[in-house]
Length: 124
Image (cartoon, rainbow, N blue to C red; front, top):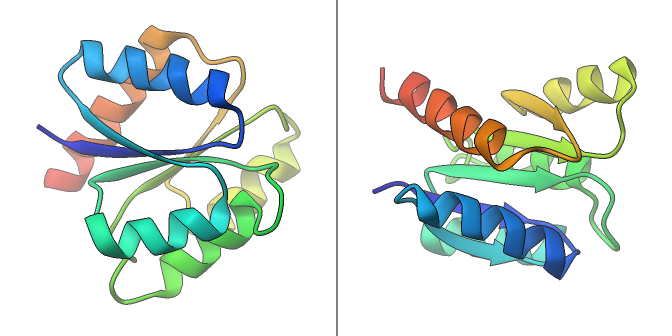
């Protein structure tokens, strides 16, 4: 089954997403911030990354841009998930290399459906 990396500085958010995804057969790995995500992504090569935007240190926009430009990680689809709900935030996230943008709070069903949709697109 697909490996999904959850990047969020909130242990509660990570737990909620992890539980929803694992219930539907996904494997998960988590990173607490952008710099941990960059290191872990190269090591474990996840099939999908769910990226928070607002985090200490390297934020989600910066981490997404770095992953999208790195030949080792540029093929990994990234879905940004944030409380930032402005259209400009979504456009900026997509410009950094994200394939989609979800606004928190995200229901478990919407999260799983988005993961399945993005992964099925990536397989084709």
